[in-house]
Amino acid sequence: STDRLLGDAYFAQSRQLFERISRTIAGGESSYARLKKGLELCFDHGEGSHFWDIDGHEYIDYSLGYGPLIFGHKPKRVIQAVIEAIERYGTISTFPYELDAEVGELFTELVPGVDLLRFANSGTEATMAAARLARAYTGRPKIVQMEGAYHGWADTHLWSSHPDVWRPQLRPYSPRPIPGSRGIPEVYGEALLIAQYNDRESLERLFAEHGNEIAAVLVEPVQCNSGVILPEPGYLEFLREITRSYGALLIFDEVITGFRLAPGGAQERLGVIPDIATYAKALGAGFPIAAFGGSREVMQLEATNQVMHGGTYTANVVALAAARAVLTEMKTRRDELWAVLNGFGERVREGLREACEAAGLRCIVQGIGPVWHIFFAKPDAPALDRIRNYREAHAYTSIDIYDRFNRAMLRRGVYFHPYHLERWFISTAHSESDVQATLQAAHEAALEVAQ
Ligand code: PLP
Image: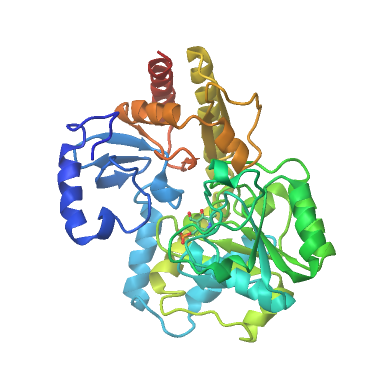
């Protein structure tokens, strides 16, 4: 299979390697949908804000390994810190050790709502642990999630992530649990309720009907898995209030927003403090680590081992040494780092809008600081000035124009995710010349697509 917009020759070497990989690795990759079918790009290496494929193309990277590479590829200080820690400790500590204390102290200092935390290995695990903790703390069975959100691939959470709610047989519809894969037992869906992000009424209705069954609302504070969708003014405060008034917990999935919107994540930048929050991605700057944490009172159930959480690899040396280096950077160079992330982020957003406007392409570019997305309008798209939820994202978006713009940018050396409901990330390694090259490419690409 070949990408119809690029043709056979573009990724000739990549396709060969991909075929070889596919002989032993199911589907040619070990994570669902990193690639878009036919777009068989194989990686050679990365450096700072750029990466190279094995066909020799160079790209400015706005995907950044799905987000972890907040300092870009091969962050020198983090890598050096990991090497030194391995030389000092080995790779697995088995026992509590000084790095636990060091990362714990930095973490709780930087994140306002976290008094106590636990380490995990992936965002999926951290979210599972947070949901279990909320159910244990409240003694209630159900978790509310938002349609279009993604909280990892666990049976308990991979529901209504990108449901095909547009099939005519599903109309009229209201958000409900729809499994995101074959093989997920229906019974897990019974422990979930699905609301629409930014839609107060949809949540009020769920609480009115199921108030004493709801353990928690689990939400990405900025919904970054349906493109990037910002909370409407007052929405996060509303979530805080309604959960509190029904005796439920508020869980922020900060796997994307954590250590990215600010050192203290969305809760610092947007000023609403949840009971529990989950972290991964930027926390390790490319090394695999995750965490969950929250108020002392809720985390007490972990502290006393009334709620089980564990793992052979949790808090391993590589993970904690990376996190210590990341958090130290963020603490000591906060202003400088976020000047780049926010400043270049805003410049690229503004430039994308201008490029599309100049070419007569209708689109919405929305995001915050270092994360954003571009939604291209279908010819018959509703007249929206912003996207507020998953269904609006879908009703508005032209996948065809997105694909064409994506490939036109890719051919000009700018890589962002080829799937139309992903997102752009920027790193502290991006430079003025990256921004200029990106915007030049965007002007050309938009004109090409508009033709
Ligand atoms: N939560 C959110 C918001 C995510 O975006 C992701 C991954 O993209 C996850 C959880 C799962 O994290 P991981 O891939 O580390 O398991």
